[in-house]
Length: 415
Image 1 (cartoon, one colour):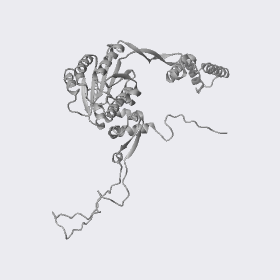
Image 2 (tube, helix red, strand yellow; image 1 turned 90 degrees about the vertical axis):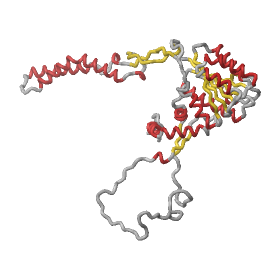
Image 3 (cartoon, one colour; image 1 turned 90 degrees about the horizontal axis):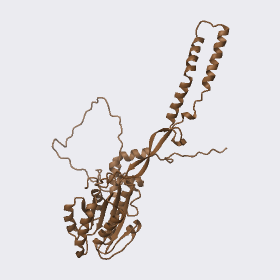
Image 4 (cartoon, rainbow, N blue to C red; image 1 turned 120 degrees about the horizontal axis):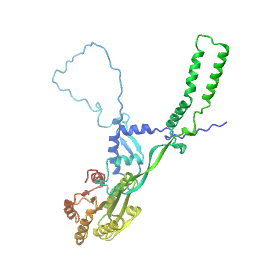
């Protein structure tokens, strides 16, 4: 006969989710620092995957107990003829110390490498971030229904059965239906244990009554269909808010490949962040040079193009999409990434469109790639930012600045 064992445990062989969570919780600070260092090394395509993080071995040292040398000890320490108090002892020859230089000893211990899966990596990556200034508009607009517990029901599917409540009902019914018989049975049993002998006829009558009572009690089923209790779930309306995020990226000729890659890395972080934190949110991708186009996610991140730079084309397209698809009930967020170059005659038009757009926007993040001090757009945008505090401006000089700037822009206290 062949026996087959099927392992349906959630933890695979040799793995333990509890131990893994305990390890992550214990070395949280070291893992957070390692994740920040890992972000700068990842490409756009690998941004949403997990990764291997290095934890210094010294942080993994466990406290240990050692037996001390107890008791009182007496000893004689010899003096010397060469040194007196205050003399300087010469440094020993090379090789006597433990630090620096080459050594023929065995190598030291390497850092501990720990691999984070996708969910764990993104959890540390976006910890503490949120869309700032999320003012919920029109909460009375019910668009979502979620099941919630609403007591118990006498019918349902087996997976929703409340075992404890069912057994409680069964025991209550059993006690209620057999309480009279149990009391009488206890009386008769007590009479049968008395020292006074009973007459033969009376003894037979008592035995017969005891048998009848026990039969009557046994006839009451332990579990009856009326005892079954199931978790009752009803659909309750949940007030929801509607949010849309516009991603605007400059792909003109003035944006070199290095600047475009940094802008794409920034938007890749933003896109993963939105996907992870918000279930109901629209993301609009707009890329522009002299002409602005609404594109899908794949074309936004991987398509290449060049040409002149007219920022007003992107702002005009953003306003048109807002008017056509999104009414005043929507929470609107805009994130614009550019190198700051623009057709000089277009600046006035861009600022006018920006002023028209900002009253409808709850948060506007402007990210300038390249780190120029005063670009064609930075100066006029900065004047507008003085009037509208929810317009936040940051500069990114290199890939190492992307993640810190991202956290500054999307911290809950940013606006």
